[in-house]
Every structure is written in structure tokens, then in C-alpha cells.
Amino acid sequence: MQVLNTISETKSFLKSQRKLGKSIGFVPTMGALHEGHISLISRAREENDVVVCSIFVNPTQFGNPEDLKMYPRTLEADSQLLEPAGCDVVFAPNADEMYPSLPNLTLDFGNLEHVMEGKFRTGHFNGVGIVVSKLFHIVNPDRAYFGLKDLQQVAVLNRMVKDLSFDIELIPCPIVREKDGLAMSSRNGRLSPEARAIASVISKVLLRAKALILAGKDSKSVIAEITARFNEMPEFKLEYFEISDFENLEPIEKQNETGKTAICIAAYLDNVRLIDNIVF
Image (cartoon, rainbow, N blue to C red; front, top):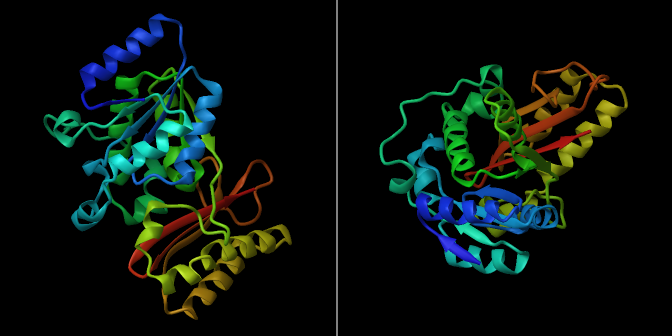
């Protein structure tokens, strides 16, 4: 496995692989890897000749400077996970390499960036869109793999790929969960033991909401029940709980009869912001 730090050497190596007729699978990450990320690498390994993983903590998608400062940088540990999983190339640039100057371009994803995550993280998806588009141009993959835990990110990037005619197949992959149901996340390690013991409440309320929707309950009553439950648990601070169309993330009144239904949540626990969703 090669670890490359510059755009030029990464482009050069991958160009040589394409000349040999090899397909390229790409997994963009910010590091602090866990089994959820490794499942993406494994999928890419099955479907491509060359597997590339980027590790870059992107400053332009953080609205909170303290959150950026606290984000773990664990390149050595990440590399030890990636190599046995079948990763061929790690692209690990620093901020100056990716941004010799800060971009003036602003991407507008319409309503997709103003609901749920976008509502509470102004400018976040502009930063995501810019860095992923830069990475796509650098790696030029055939396929790119993203976890569905960041459902809204997948929706935003899917729109970007279509609207800007990227010749890339975007492949969303299932959420990987801990044994108690908590969605795997690099943020989970910041929870205290006491908080971690109750964190699975988040996945449990998603399953409860799904059952209510399937039983014919309307979204308004389901949201009210879940909100009331969180109001009884002072350890949690519920930021949003939404029942939406899977494709455009617009709120829906009942189960989506023409497509998939997405139930999405963000909540603080032990001052750690956790997100999760369920799609059916």
C-alpha cells in the first residue's frame, strides 16, 4: 500500500494504472477510521482493480472551529486498518496541498442544503461539495463509495455528480452498527462510558418510528411521540427528528408510497453530536 501526500504524485500514479486498463474505486474519508469505513473499502475491493482512500480533515466543512480542532488525526492507525482491508493507495494531503488559497466558488444545492444538517450547519455542504469535487478530479475514479449514515451528504453529492456530469458511479453503502445498534462513528469514542451505555436509544427510537409509520401513523404524531420521549431524557438534546422523502429530503406526511421513506435524527449526548437514519 502506498501513502501519497501530494496531488501530483497521486495523479501520476493513478494515470499509470488507468493506462493499464485498471478500474479505480475511491473511498473519501476524514480519517479516524472504523469498521464502517472498512466496509466501504471491502466493497470497493470487490468491484475495482485499484482501491484509493483519501484521508483529509477538510476545514471548509466545519462551521465550528473547536470541532475542527478536536477532530482526531490518526493516519498511522488508519493505515494499519486499510492495508489488510485491501486498500492500494492512501491519499493524505495537508490543508495547504488541497487549498493553496481558499476557494471563492460557492455551491448551491437548493433545498437539500437547507433542511436537517444544512439547517444547523450553515455552509457545511458547500465545503463538502468543493472538497469532494476536488478529490474526484484528482483521483478520477470509476466508482466512489459513501456510507448512508451521512444520508444528506449522499443526496447532495448525488445531485452534484448528476448536475456537473461527473463520469463517476456513486455507490451508497449500508450503515454499519455496533452490537447495541449505535451507528458506527468516529465521534462515538468521545462519549463517556455512561453516555455510551445509553447511546443506542437513538437507533431504538428510529425503529420505533419506523414501526409507527408502517402501522399507518402520520408523521406529525410520530414526531410528537419521539420528541416527547427525548424530553424525558435530560442526557439528550434533540436537534432534529424528520420523516422525509429519501431522494429530495422533503418532509412527508405518511409513508412514501412512490419511493423510499427516510427517518433522520441528530441529537447531542455528552456534548457529542450524533446522527443516524433509517430508510425503508
